[in-house]
Amino acid sequence: MRLQPISIVFGLFLIACGAQHPIVASRSAQQAAGAPSRRAAAADARSESDARISQPEMPSHAVGDYLIRAFTLPSRTRVTVTERVVAVKDTSVVVEVTREVRAKTRSIRVELNDAPGRRGEILEVTVLRGGAELPRGKAAYDAIMRGTEFAVDENEGQIDSADTKLDVRGRALECTETRFRVRVRGQEATMRTVQLANSPWGEVAADVTTPEGATLYRAEVLDVGHEELRTAAVAEH
Image (cartoon, rainbow, N blue to C red; front, side):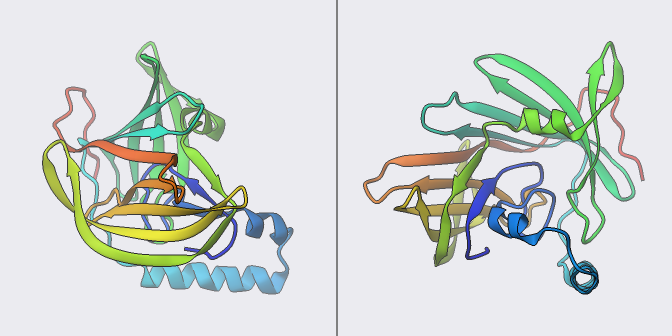
């Protein structure tokens, strides 16, 4: 976690070790960076190289893995997002993402890099029309995930972290719960994140609450697991 202004960004494959959209992304660092110098670019390249070498091995996804979550923010409609792995390739996975709001649904397919150090990067976005996959830009993915983000002004540091159980449909799943002291619109709050143990989904849930107990943001797991697909999707190796 970076101790600076942050945004909770829940996207595909939320894992703490650098996949895809990290759960905490620094806005101030991005805005202040500007165009990197050659020295900074070289340092970044070395850092990325080191990350690829040192990044711990994560469990691999299989066709049929799925994760269903609900996102709740005050004064906004509850958003339910289902992520389902429909194909596994040598260095990428394809996930079908379905957004549901007020019983209305829409889906896209996203191909994600699964190579060490690049895990979770978006490679391609498509939509299904008449049985065919039509290419779309990243904007289609951003639209699907709209309403799942929450901005935090400042992260003042970690409070504690402990191994615990996450209750999902009567199943007690091993996970790590971490709490942080944050500020939202100048007021104190607590951010809690939940990371599944030994799971490729990694960091899957979070909430932000005030000292009075009001919930400012909540991302909860409705279901997670594996089921055989009824489609013709086949894992590629």
